[in-house]
Length: 564
Image (cartoon, rainbow, N blue to C red; front, side):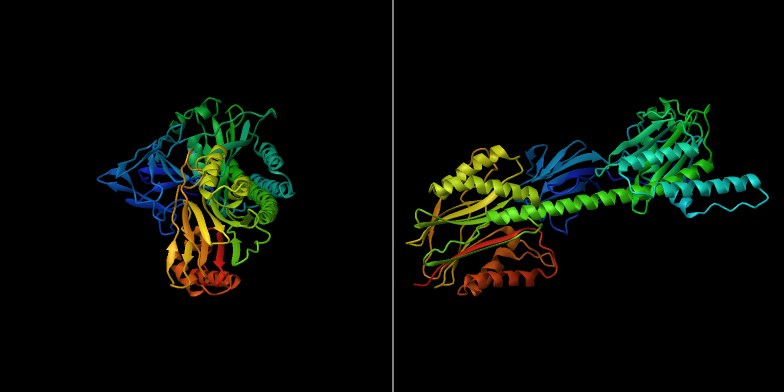
């Protein structure tokens, strides 16, 4: 078996970004190219799931050896350490970049070694071997003439067989880890043993540990060892840590008086889940290469069982989440209008299709003032999934009272925005459009809180008007001012309210469906009954996107004044 040298290290990029996206699990991204575009487009170098991002939001690039960031004309801007950037701005380790709901912390990418300092390449008291190669190579069967070797070979096979049987029965992770330590102490007789597991965020934690006296003991992972064993998939045999210069600064090892140590990765084909370490003073024992080989085998079996337990727990959790999601969707559907009001002289139709089981979109059609007015409302809250649906439910509850009290749309938004800002974190907000229709005259008084501009399709002329924003999204600022505007529906005219999940859906060429395509489709079907028009619009969108999944919820609310 060839020894693995630790003297050659690959050059690392100058910067590492710790990314906490608006949705999903945090991760690290190494800036390796001279220019990296960040945005929600799949063609961006660093793609983030955040609907508040522009498709190409900002860019990090190298100019003359200096790392800079620039905003690419995004809708919501780029903040560096809380300040909006206006041009190419230098970035350095420790800086914090905020892109809408996503936060990127800048770290140096040059420090591989960890908190304890780098492993020295000098000394000959440590052996590293690739765990995958140890597992792939079967131990050579000894000849019958070597009785001692035959006895050791048989013992090793018996141990691994016992471990397979012991770990084969169903158990929870805590019991599994304790059983692994039991077998390690039974067969390898260390003074201390510990199992370290990686968290989803990449942090290494002590999941189980024990001393030879049977008591739990606090053992900290050596960053030196973790870098070699977990990151590189190496098994380590330390013959004498006290005299090996590699561990001259490894306080977590030297402080315990450790002399001999073996460590193996909890190896799976998908990467190491963590590592198991056994250590001892020389007065107790010094580990040998055959001990290392046995530990690697034990760790591989343990890793398989740990992964299976994790998968089982994930399956149970996934089933629970699916049940909760289904319940949330039933509750949310109950919040949507069970029946669109039958307003004399008008057709009204609404539809909501969530992208993740539950929706962050909401629409409403409510008659008030004894049927003299009809309030049409559509909303799109930031985020997706259950969190967005909870905010949607809160928004619906907060809006109900001012609507029933007969308030105009601009006053409704002022009240809603103030209440939502107080109750939610800064990154949570909603775009909303509300229209109060005078049933007798066809006049509409509306307010648009940063929502996609609804369309008014004129049946007589084919002209389409866009009803643009009259104020910012609600809940975005502690105090916001909204204005109202007026428009009127004539005979056969169509009002189309929609959310961005419709117009920002993309095809395989990464082209957006766009407001222009929606306008053309509405104009083509302006005379269709509204149920048929809704189906025609969905069919046109489906034909455009093809097999590309919808990234966002899709909601529409249509109203047409009947021809007189």
